[in-house]
Amino acid sequence: MDYTHWLVVFIVILALGFDFINGFHDTANAIATSVSTRALTPRWAIILASCMNLVGALMFTGVAKTIGGKITDPFKLEHGLTVVIATLLAAIVWNLITWWFGIPSSSSHAIIGALAGAAITSEGWDGINYSGFIGILKWLILSPIIAFVLGFCIMFILKRVFARSSPHHVNKMFRFGQVLTAAFQSFTHGTNDAQKAMGIITLALVTADIQDTLDIPLWVKLSAALAMALGTSVGGWKIIKTMGTKIFKIDPMSGFSADLGSASVILGATLSHFPVSTTHAITSSILGVGSAKKFSNVNWSMAGRIVVTWVITIPAVGLLAMLIYSVLSLFLH
Image 1 (cartoon, rainbow, N blue to C red):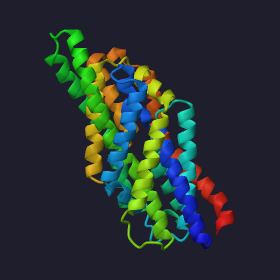
Image 2: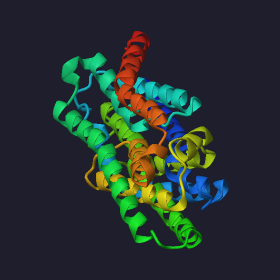
Image 3: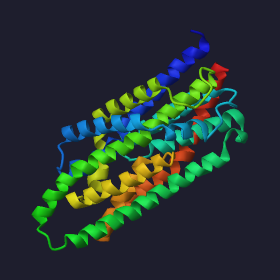
């Protein structure tokens, strides 16, 4: 193999590493509520999440094509492989930092911000496809708001429907319901998050002239789906603790409501071919549910810490990718 093909192999390894880290970083997204209410044991919750992530990742490719072609034009990048390497390194570093501190940050924001930063450093401001990038940003901003409102509404309705029911009966029923919503949550996570690595790998294949379309090869889908599922099986217990216990005390009904609300938003985004932050959608849905249950019970200081992380991720990772690209360009160009 020549130099270019070796770089592509390295990129594939990095992208699958990102997907693996994304899996254990975002395990909490799918199972935090069901574990915290004891609807599922941690072991069974992770097995369920791993399997459903795998199924979801194999079923769709629209988000992957958006990542591969809507932020920057892979057919016009002069140093596309260096851009992709800088993107992946920056996103991986950010994910590991936030995982270490137990902060549920967004892998989606990380990869999108990093790709934008690396593309700008390589091509100047003309390296960004502004219409596509702004469209993605709109979904990233709107999806948490929609998830908050949806979580609030679902919880508000269920509270009134079951206001006079036995708490024991309600908890038993919704613990069973949480198994279903945890599966739904994990499935939608796979449909959206695993596609980001697929899109990055395909972008690299196009810039290396290995293929001339943004169609996702079967081997890319399979490898990214398996990497996500394996990462999910490792688990991210620090983030599970944050999402399952530190925002507010979740019971089976509120856990069911939060999962249903966020998973619906994520699936809607996937069907529209837009990447969203599954972390943001799920956390916002939990906040909405907590607000509907009892506003004063929500740990708003923790919520504020999470929001700050949301806001700074794209510019912070973009700057990190710029720095990494500048260093790599000294050796790879």
